[in-house]
Length: 123
Image (cartoon, rainbow, N blue to C red; front, side, top):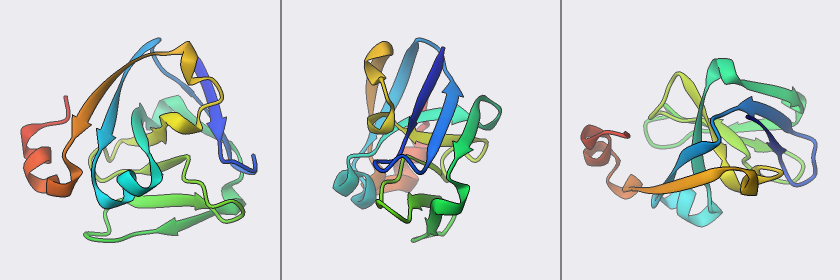
């Protein structure tokens, strides 16, 4: 099914194709905890940035492998390139126009202990 979403000011807009039933990762790392980011992993070929590439700014920390993309106007991170899934975007479930259209299963991810959690797997 097609989903749409973006940032608060609507400068950044995206669309993606996902199944009706999805698993979302709920991470407890410092960034995800502070921002309420809930990860819906979308492979690159199924994601399209509709507008706002010029409004995105990037932030990297720790290993620098993840590229956190924020709207420079409103500050919302609606999606980003995670280190955990280099072939996919992590879309914030909270940034979707209609997350209620999806059947969502939430899986906890211990991002505070990223290396150990990643070794245990994401599936």
